[in-house]
Length: 193
Image (cartoon, rainbow, N blue to C red; front, side, top):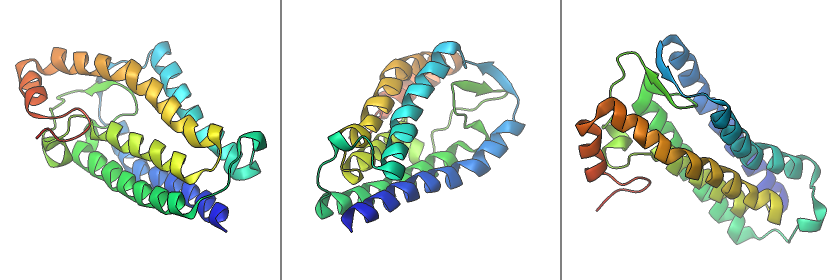
């Protein structure tokens, strides 16, 4: 029974992620792009993340493969996974709400782009990445499979490590001293105390 709840919870996390994102995706498409960093390297990074957070766990949830990497489902880990998934979805919603039309799936700057420093961005520079780390952690807690469970941490981890520095350089180029001051007073993934 725990395995069924865990698999359904992972599916709910993915559906929740999609439902939260769609309206912002539509809104963002209407805003004109001034700078687009959707390079081949960016597409590669996104595909690695999608594989770890989407494709591999979907194969496990749908077919329970790869079976050799399965371990017994644990109700405590499942409960923790559900709690972390809920926090991830709340964080995910707050980031989209704060960004509004400035949101994008890749590194894009809109015309008349403004630096968002309100809402969840008042204390954390990259709360979207925090939300994805939480989603990957929820996946690891929910899916009792060494490969499917942890593929999100690996896949998203690669995207994060290869992207966050580049993203901050773009923000510094675009917003200069304003972004530097913002960096000084905020934490990258967690609030700075």
